[in-house]
Image (cartoon, rainbow, N blue to C red; front, side, top):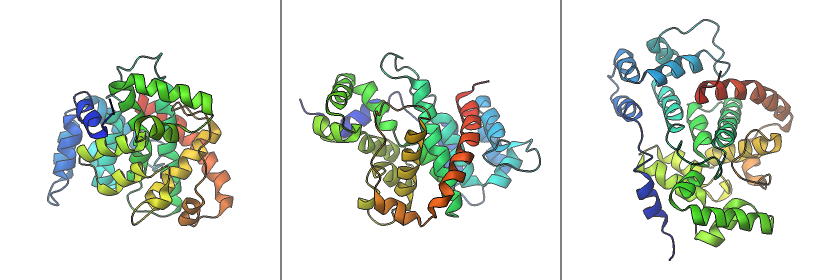
Length: 283
């Protein structure tokens, strides 16, 4: 029986519903009159997320000169939209913790995803993009469709892994052969059902082939390049055995000097360690 991407995502929503704090915060910032104090109250409903938000605000990701000791101060300095992306990032890691380790190493999966998120944020900073946390969130979520497959279609997911090993081909290409769609489409469908911004949905959907994205291709191009850098450095693993093929139009779209890559890698190595510690809750 043929698989249907929409049905798979609808089923997985039972175990991948966004936490209440993420939903409340996202809804609250739609009102321009919402105070930062009210937003702090919302975040404080989940003490684990509140703690992580403060740790991230004080980390090398932001490198502020003085300590940020309250949620309100963090929101004021970072911004409401940016804080919403941080909350999403802290929340989503909890959602797929029931996948057995013999199916996929979840620690390595999130280390890879966090590395892509961090590299995406660094590249967006060099591009002087607005709301760089949006790129962090998109990077963190770029492979979430793989987890959907493991949860709802493990037989097919294992078939994909086996065929990848036999053909020495990239996972998203084999997924299209086996399933008729790839993990990028599944991930984008889930983010759409979570009511994330359309540009984030499109970024995840097109991160393998940014050049075919409709309209602006900067978002998927940043994630695409960050993914290649992360695979090359072997920071974590999402199950992919090879470094993705570079889409040259993606690099051209970023309009960055190739000489910055060594600096990006240096910053990534520092920031990735801190981001892993705070998001995964490691000591």
